[in-house]
Amino acid sequence: MEKIALITDTTADLTEEIIEEYNINILPFRIIYKDREYKDKIEITPQEVYDNFKVEVPTSSLPSMQDTEELFTKLEEEGYTHAIIITLSTGLSGIYNGVKLVSENHPKITSHVMDSKAISWGEGALAHKCGELIKEGKDFNTIIDELYKFRQKIQVFFVVGTLEYLKRGGRIGKVSGTIGELLNIKPIIVVDNNDGKYCTYDKVRGRKQSLNRMFEIVENKLKETKCSIYVMHGDALEESTKIYEKLSKLENASKVVMGGAISPVSGVHSGPGLVGIVLIEES
Image (cartoon, rainbow, N blue to C red):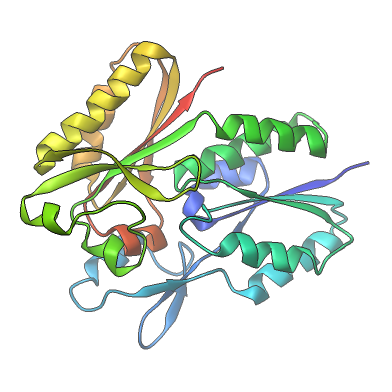
């Protein structure tokens, strides 16, 4: 009989309630300052990262090989026969390859590493769905097939306060913004479903207009199909709350969830001022 473990990482932004309900194993990214490093979400909060920007902008690193090895060893000892690992987009991180390497050291567990091609609740929604399917008693291969179908229904949109942090961290992807910054052009950024990198969906002038345009994009999408919506933020609670309230009034929104603050490591790369929306098409 299959005993399936579920693993994801801290950028999935799952709530403690979901993690506990579906027994999800979380691999923490690392946030690195000159004098020490922290485990993402475990030893440092998003606000602590933003508050310290004026002193130092940290770098980040993958979950440690030791943490990953210890997790797989623990799962073996607990009798797990299979594992599904859902990672941050390979277009944004090398975690997929790192976890795959460790999983191959543990042949007693049949593992499948899945590239979410997303971040935050785009990744988290996949992990949540996987948890539900495991709980329903679906078999390993069926779950994997259903997850890849589900991944096609997810879209991640966001705006940032400045492109400076994405550029600094090398996460700018296909978003061009050097001249745009001078003209106060604000891109609405989407995570490309093909390669999982950031690209420009649309662009407008000014912060207020960028938030309004992102709302319009979602509003138009909901005219075509029913969707679940998750709203996240990076040091932009007030603005994200306003957009959440507006989205909650739209027809065809099957549910609108305030997803809260993105993980500290995501905040390192996006900087303060992120407002994000994840759309999940209903089948």
